[in-house]
Image 1 (tube, rainbow, N blue to C red):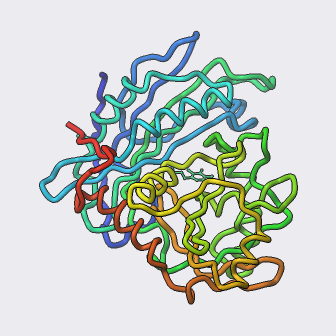
Image 2: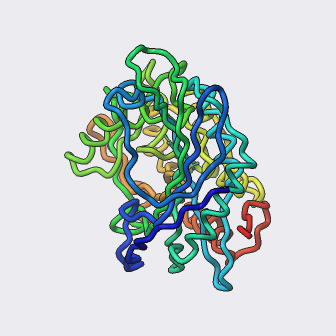
Length: 351
Ligand SMILES: *Cc1c(COP(=O)(O)O)cnc(C)c1O
């Protein structure tokens, strides 16, 4: 693989002030698609792309991405968490968006080279990681609306701290009853750029009213729970842990799947099924809504302390992080940081 090193390495940020996605490492991976084939991946200095104003991704949003994390253990090993699943999902997203799939083995090997090169950028404090952002964009210079014939795949890396400024504090969420993120038959199960653009309005409205995130309902009946912000969502109702089933408009989160596997293995009752707001309200009124949390790579597990629906405030678990939420956060971050054994085979050493 061709590697071009930077002549101008950056100062590394203070690991207590990382925030999320504000700093980028010195190098990135780039791989171009032209004439029906992917070229070899290359490592080059992190720098702006030059592109024409007519480049089609800028107009029609034919673009997809992924999010994963790399860690550095106490002994100095570099590890990644479930990275194969990210590449499988990215190829599924590519197919949905009429983009070419890639050979995950080639890309993974190239990513590992990039991680080894950037190993000193991987923060080690608890709760920190090196965020991995694989992205693919259409980059043909043409305004006609059709699938592009040229693509660029790239991976950038960003040292990150906790996703939320206030750490693991339970969040406040507002159920969005008008705007939707995506619909069945749409692109909700692909990790594509347009889904995020579509979700901004609901998120901004929620923020303006003092909430952290919008909770998304289904587009057809505005009745069934789908996701929270850009995370999957779980509820604990009585002794059942419930998460919406993957009906086509919901992103199949890898953290969601990790939660399901952990809960099953540790004997919890976990269901993937449709869940309506009426059911949530009824459970709350009976005192059976025990916990609620979001799941995603960036935050891992994000407890929810308040859900507001049709003007009704539902305080979950006294606004504190619940027992199952804590268990999952501890278990999954413990496996990621090698505090716990890798009993599911999720951790790969980069060497
Ligand atoms: C990425 C994403 C998630 C979380 O997926 P993970 O694989 O757990 O990071 C959930 N919902 C949406 C809309 C997403 O884009």
